[in-house]
Image 1 (spheres, rainbow, N blue to C red):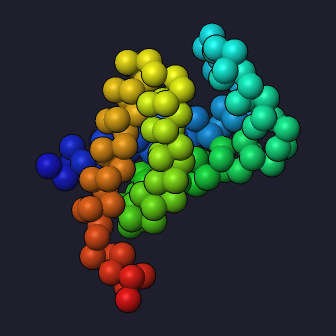
Image 2 (image 1 turned 120 degrees about the horizontal axis):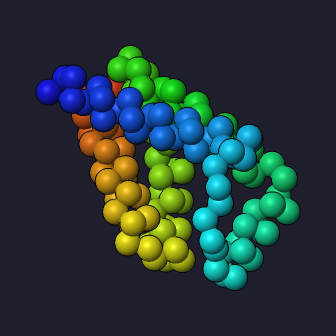
Length: 125
């Protein structure tokens, strides 16, 4: 089970590192987007610091998520980005593929948060 958990966390972390690097290097093709999504992306681009910040959080969180010693921190760092992804996919995008991928990633993130709950107890005192 330990190896399966490591592989799942490795893939999860690498997906976020890849997504974060793409925000800086723009190497993945952009899917066709709706006019409503275009308005949102235009608004994000007006805030020049927002996408680099999200990209940096994705890279840092993804790297932290990969290694067992820092996984608890990585799960918390990635959580706000994951909530944003879930909200976007389930309210605006509404593609079944996006919903399934985001749902699985969100469940993995929640699993790691629950798995490391003892490490968070000191923060909640």
